[in-house]
Length: 70
Image: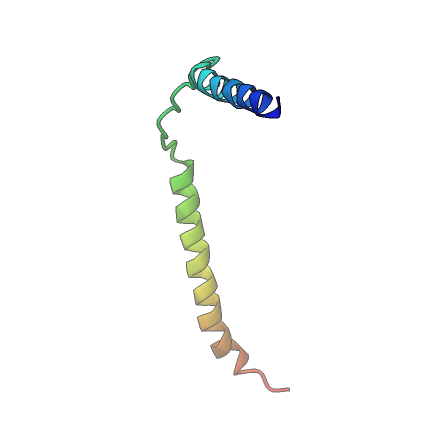
């Protein structure tokens, strides 16, 4: 009796697995292609300019700090 109910359970599980693969509500819509609106380019240029300003600050600062005596 236990083997029959096990076989029925396994058969039902296999049928459910095969049927559930073919049942879909809707297919997903394709994602729109990415476009550049220019703000990412502007932000990249701003980051580069800030990095240049930081490097120049650290290059100029030791020259400025060496003239002070305490």
